[in-house]
Amino acid sequence: MPFLSTIVTMSWLLFAIHNLGYLLSAGDVTQPKRGSQLKSVTLTQEQKYMTYVHIFAFFWVGELLQAMFAYVLICGVCTWYFTSTSETRGDLSITRGFWWAIRYNFGSLAFGSFILAVVWIIRITFEIMDKQIKQADPNNAVVKVVSGCVRCCLDCFHRFVKFINENAYIQVALTGDSFCPSAVAAFILALKNAATFFITNGVGSLIYLLGRFTIALGNTFIGYLIITNAAEFEEIDNPLPPTAVIFVISFMMATIFMDIFGSTSLACLQCLYADVDICNQNGQDPINSTARPKEMTAVVSMLVDHK
Image 1 (cartoon, rainbow, N blue to C red):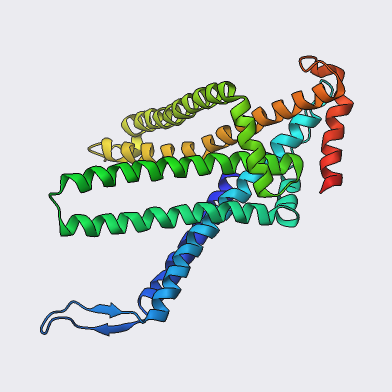
Image 2: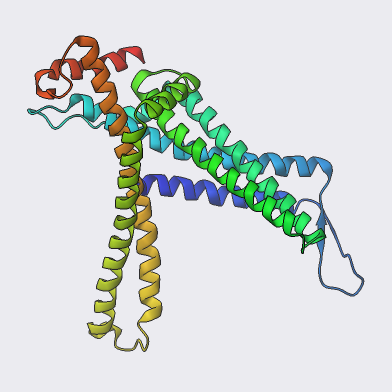
């Protein structure tokens, strides 16, 4: 999943940058100053609108791809949780997640991605306006304080929307509802169990941070030993530059793979509370999970029938 999502996302990134280059170079080329080698491109109003639409589509499609791969992983976790018993290891179906994402819940994923794309455009617009204001009056302390506060609020709002979206996608996978009811249900669930969500996210963030640095530093240390002791690398005078490259690549790969841990832990947490609700409705003990394998397997059948 990390390898596939990275390849697809990078392909879209290169494709979008390629098309943006064509749009930005489609205007009339002029020479502002006589005798200067610098050129400028003047876009028509229609070309500007096309550029704006392309930038918005870049964020929308990029967020949609991330949402789809996250949803596929969530579906795998949910089906595994409700089919895993003492006799079987569970059914973690990735193909079922792709089928549900494209066939049944594509609109919900697109709507959640649309909201994040709008937030991205708002943040970019603010940064452009903030840069222009600071260029007009660079020494205004009030402007700097206000811009810092607004930037902090936008960042917090962006993180909040991402958290709600991820929880909403889990509810979409569990219930089959559309995005808005799922987002409301996820928000209420997070409020009802705020302490558990806070502890889980705190511990998960700590493990996420430690995991990234452990993998990166471990690979870097092994790479340093190989470079300094292997006969093939005797011509290298300073091992620090290749070691730094190893650290950067390892940190990026560790970040990509550790993202699965965050999504999986959150999905398992919501499956747990769905499990507890099912037990309470059936008058069963939520702690005694071994006494109800048929009920748990029936949940997946119910989801498939609902789809």
